[in-house]
Image (cartoon, rainbow, N blue to C red):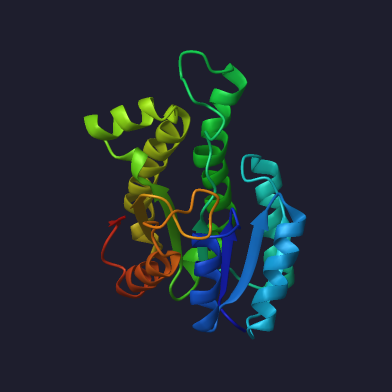
Length: 230
């Protein structure tokens, strides 16, 4: 049976590049997102390229929803080998001091509680497989530096900065916690916008570079964190 990669937070940019890169290596691809039209289009494109792909609509910020999707993937596609977390939270929180408390809690629903639920649900598969791994996409606003703090504040992106910082710490903690079970955890923090996304610009990062780096990290299983800069 083919190895399976689950991509949570499917959309243009990194997630699409990951589906293509791992699919080219023989992985079957399970796509998770809330937007069913986007999922259907993604599956169609991947299949046209000879990649086995299926869609599983779910909310990355709802632990019950994400657990149900993981169970459906296992039932339909078999044991999971790689979990790629590309879901982002905090996009609707510009200023932490004026944010709606519900929106602020939502920052952690996606990047902490959702990722933990997915990890727990897929964990038995990941530790029982040859090459079990969790790969985490992140953004440069999560860097612990005054420069990034200033940029996030000035750009009214404090929510995504908080989410990215939480995701970075969680990735590191999971790497330490799960290494004894043979599960590799790797994170890439990308500084800058990504081609193919709504924020695309002439200097944006090619998502294929990110996907290729993830593949390299997955193969070597020795580097927990990497950065890619615009």
